[in-house]
Image 1: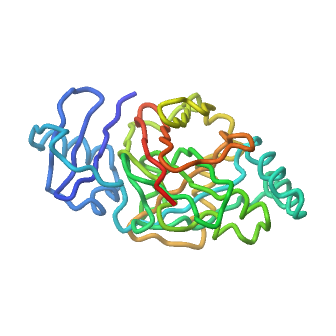
Image 2 (image 1 turned 135 degrees about the horizontal axis):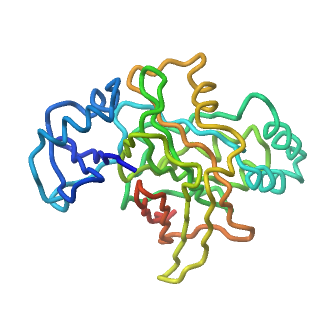
Length: 281
């Protein structure tokens, strides 16, 4: 696969190519304008050719988010449907997840923006009023201002399962809070869409011990990326583009819950690995 990787920095953009070991730096165009280029792959090619060689380690890497909103889709995998039904059974909310999985219209919700986003190496948070907290590893689409899927990154949809399980109407509180939207480490711009065999892998370490590992292929999704993007942009316009997390089926079984200082590693090749630490409550 031929691709470029774009890394957002405070002073410009780092560009890497699948066909070169060099990292180039460019200040030629603002991040938000760059990622909304109509032919982003060709724009990356031009930027890489005109960029200046640099040492990647000399740059601070920001989340790949500028003025974009971050949205998320839910219950897009069978395993997610089962898990949500289990956690909400006592409240009687399990039927809603069963219905939305097979419904024509997907579940889509607002996740945050740059102020809620946490990049690679940053600290994600768990709510102080929640007792059952999990990360949700998700392939994340970048949809440009023209409603085209042009790039990918990795999302960590931090979630408080006990709050959502108590009542599905509590989903915004379970999903949207400071430090709840992990995203990064870069924006992958491939010449062609990612293959259905693309693997999402998540590991959680506690004091250097592996306490959870799970993986899946994006082929296990019930809905297509194009379908999710179409529903999100059907009656919403995004002048700077938008990020859309596409759901997960990697769900740690109860009673597992995150603890402060746990290390979360989410790998999706060829994007890379999003590594984050759970902050103290």
